[in-house]
Length: 137
Length: 287
Image (cartoon, rainbow over all chains, first blue to last red; front, side, top):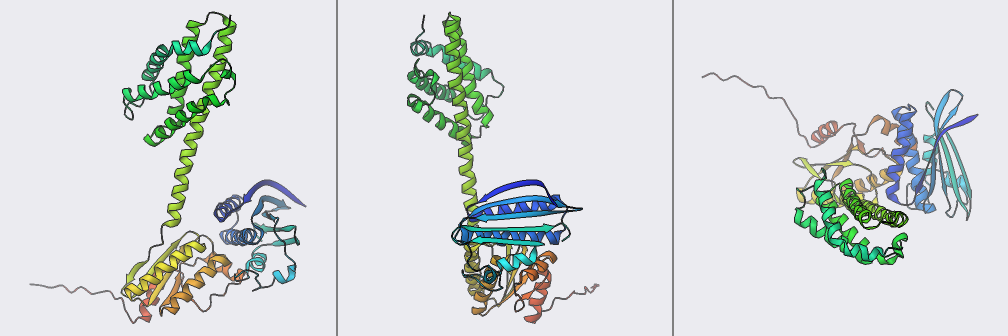
């Protein structure tokens, strides 16, 4: 069972919001005592997802939660946008696939960097990505 | 008996000004280093004149009334100039609130009916409070403008390209590499390569907090452009956690020379340009 210990919402509207968001994620990661490597993995994944949200979803809202399951603490990040959505999620999760002119590593890379990854998307309605990084995960 | 606030205030304007000036001059927080007493008097007089002109019994309880537009305008002007001169918001606030004291003191002397006194005092008090809030708002707005300007300046500060050795350029990157920044970095680097005829450029990313796929893509673009110019690029300053993250992300940097520190990158650069750094042995010379 997952217990939410603290919640923090932040809206992302422009590119200047990326760095403050990343810093805030880092703050929470430091607070729960995450190792430097895991911190970096989490903020890199957060950075990828938040950039995706800006680039394809036109901005959206994020939620940073400190969660606890059993003896382990972790950070859960939720990214929700009201953009065009993703038609083919398995294709979007493939390495090197991009509809923009990027490397196509954002989604699959972010998945490899975190402990748990969940993506839900309805074409025309928007996309929600939820990731969890456990302290020692 | 109803009191005509407007007339009363206009009649007693001189007295209020004297009292207000007295209050201000008696205050410990008076900044006579920033403004002479004469200037202060002129400023106070202007504000008070505008106030006594616009206030009447009808709008006393309605601060949103457009009658006060002129007062608010003068007030914002005062607040901004004071902020620039180095007044703290507390001092500007105290300036407005000392006017309230003066006004209330005069009202107390002039109005004998307690109910009337209370009504007018309440109105004046509320009005002056909203003036005080306005000075704070303007002050904050002024500060925000400064912050925005600084943000622009920071983004405009181009990353310096430094010559580490003859033919070797160093480019310390600090902060996040976004598209506009990459453009500046790339332009500067390519320009300096031409100017100095360098064959090696070291990109140091010690100051980049996180390397995500966008930053990596920008780095690769910069390196490709440098190669087209006939120079070789080395990335240095890759920290252990960055290395692990890049691997997990799946970014392929295998065809780029990467080093952990700037020192090792420089050493590598020396070796490919056939340079050698040696310790010299000092020979004692005896005369």
